[in-house]
Image 1: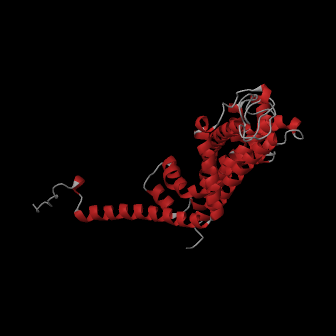
Image 2 (image 1 turned 180 degrees about the vertical axis):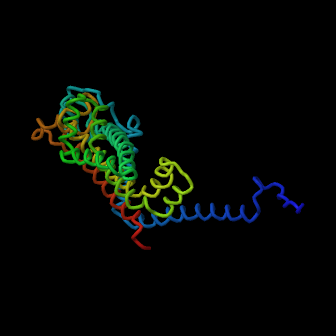
Length: 313
């Protein structure tokens, strides 16, 4: 009988030192490559001053939302009727509304509502859109036709009109507003994911995953989706600003957050009757909406440029 090959002690599974070294080198190269990609994206983003400015504005929004109880000088619903409609002064930097409530405090608490609506509604759209887009792009055939025709029907309606129609069925309120905004924006994510999957699903690494017997779900979520995250991330950033704007529009129409909760769109709606006598009631919530949407759009544009692989150092 021939001599049996001795398995080196301490090597799991009988793997040789060469195999282990190659595996370690591959993992190190993969980790290093990922870190290098992040460094390249960060270098590109640092050169985009408008994107950094937008990111700072978004961080200010997050800071105000998280620490509103400690930053706001007064409770948002505290009334003081003798001081109603008082213009900006030292005690009330943004004045008071018709009930004597501090406008600055309500603007700060409104940031919390806007961030909540933006994050949750975009999360709903992201989950549904990625699932439908991945299913449509990877499976194809009649599944693709049904899903895409449904997305086309939804895109045929103006977003705010479709959101109002959904709110008419669900009823007014914060939760229903987030659901309506999330459903309205699903087609945007679905089409982006579908187009990205169609462009890469025939690549060699996908064919190799099929050849070794990977399941369809594993191929989609482990091999395809991680390689199309750049457009999804950019769309999520821009979609958050759109969700905040749509939530303000629904609040303006009385379909979003209900009184007395502080919300920028509802504050603008109530300020209409005082537009000439107390214009500051509409000015400050309007500036808050403008700054938030502008900051997220600038950051989204800069992030899109930074994640574009066609740009060279």
